[in-house]
Length: 199
Image (cartoon, rainbow, N blue to C red; front, side, top):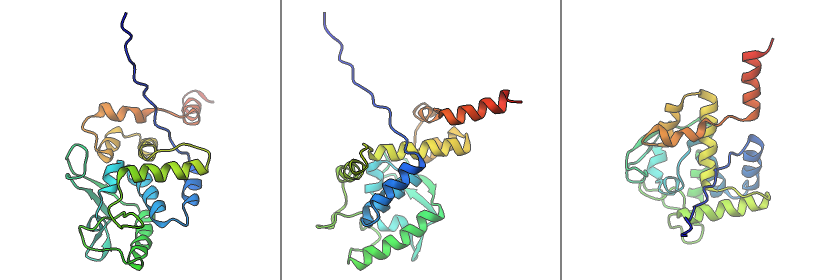
């Protein structure tokens, strides 16, 4: 009898607020890595989308954009989408761009936003995976770039209860892929029970 091979599907993890802060604090002296993690936690970009960002996607006419356009060329399904950038991310990008300029990195509109530290080539998705491995190992945990995306999607759904907004922000072509973000934490479930059945 032929055994069917089953691929183990790992459920992405959600970083709680403390884990997010500890992760960012761990990277406080690594400007590029901290900005990359912060950026993904607040936009839900895929690993390849974040690495594919150019300076011109973030800076237009000398200012940090208020709405980020994920170009079709780097989007997984080749469909562009627009994501608001909250003020804390825009402020962080101002400091990050200044840091890049102090390092003498290229600042053309098609220059990579995130570069390798030595060669200053575009950071590759595998590089981002290594950054997350190293940072999370220091915490005794194991987080991936996709966990940052999953954290964003979960937080957006919890804040809005609007699955369509999550779908649009994450660039899913259908709601089927977005349904994973409907999971409810025990604390939220308790609050809803108390609202429904409490005195």
